[in-house]
Image (cartoon, rainbow, N blue to C red; front, side, top):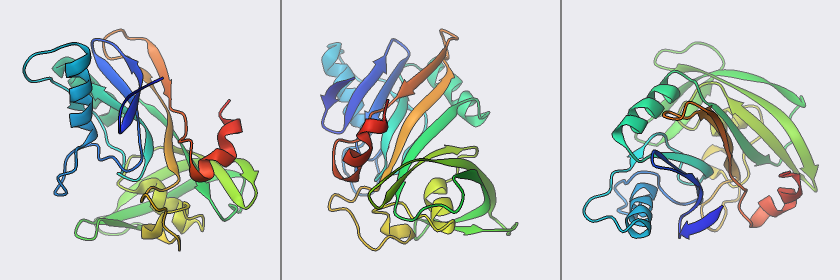
Length: 232
């Protein structure tokens, strides 16, 4: 993996896809803040590396919350974008996240099912234990990977893909992600990041038709340093 720019590192690239490890704090797509998003930073990287004149096409396939780091897929052609969108829509991808929490889960592994309802104005999601009008069924699997000092490293596999799903479901279980004050942690990280990382993503390449797995190293800072030896 090579550092391509402030904001991301390149994990893999070919004529169809650009797979990056996004830094926490970087938007995937632009918003009202006007801050440079990953999509524009990556376009600039492509433009410079391949000396491309004019506008560079780069399609955003999926998103990560701004305070979250890890694997993001960008499409370099409209065909790749269309096919990757279909893979995500049909749930033909496998995602693995790592999360650091302060409270030990009651079980060492398990499945969480909630109905999630997002308040768009507050940009916050509420979890319900039963069906609720307007709320979407949400499911994830988790397991404990390690315990160092007073922190626990969880591996999370979201079955559905809802806004803030991992953050709110773990918090509802009593395991708030460290640094995530929106969902109950008492102390924010100075840089606004939270200890949630998109660790691994697997899918069949949209053109080559090969099963591929991409893995992103955790940030070399803060509590992540406690668990770097578990990366393997």
